[in-house]
Image 1 (tube, one colour):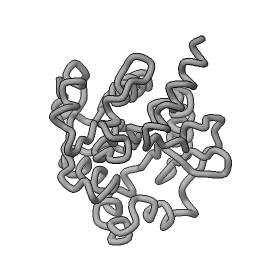
Image 2 (tube, helix red, strand yellow; image 1 turned 90 degrees about the vertical axis):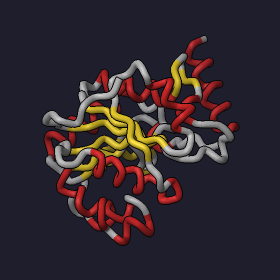
Image 3 (cartoon, rainbow, N blue to C red; image 1 turned 60 degrees about the vertical axis):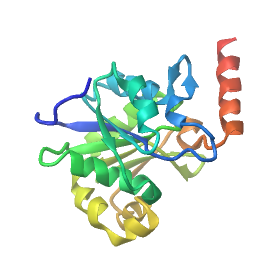
Amino acid sequence: MQLALTYDMALAGVVLAAGASERMGRPKALLDFRGRPFAVRILEALEALDLKSRVVVLGPDAPRIRPALATHDCVIVENPDVAGGAIASLRAVLAALEPVRPTGLVAWPVDLPHVRVATVELLLETYRRSGAPAVVPRFAERRGHPVIWDQALFAELATSPAATRHGARAVLLAHEQDLVTVTVDDPAVIDDLNTPADYERLVREVNRDIY
């Protein structure tokens, strides 16, 4: 089921799943994490966080991924510019949400299904309290994801030549003095899963936690 884009939205949760997954060899969005595909796990987390507007950005594997999302309330946006990376996906979302845009976006890469809901809840609390243009998690002195983008940066995300060349991090760098970085006790925020070995490690960790 897809939601109509006609109501007033506050924060929107965005699952960034448009990559070609070349190093993984199969769509990351469909990999299993605790009995659910990655993309579904993140959607469920966004639901638990009460983000009523949920968007999934898909790329070349859209026909394979769409059926897994069919029973979830989300808007599916296809990004035709996969080579453009995450900034192209964010731009596709912003274009799709015209003219009714959310007040901010929680941009959650699909290869981070293991980020704790409590971690994102902390980011959301910080964002709502601070009113910062962006809120970024940090673990072991490294910045990670998900990133919360306020609407104040939407125009820059959509048009910045620096972002076109270097990705959304160029916008973060341009607003270094204003963004808020939150130190979290969650290594998953910097643990991108790009290869089969990365995924096998995650499966081992999950099985260790279960047993």
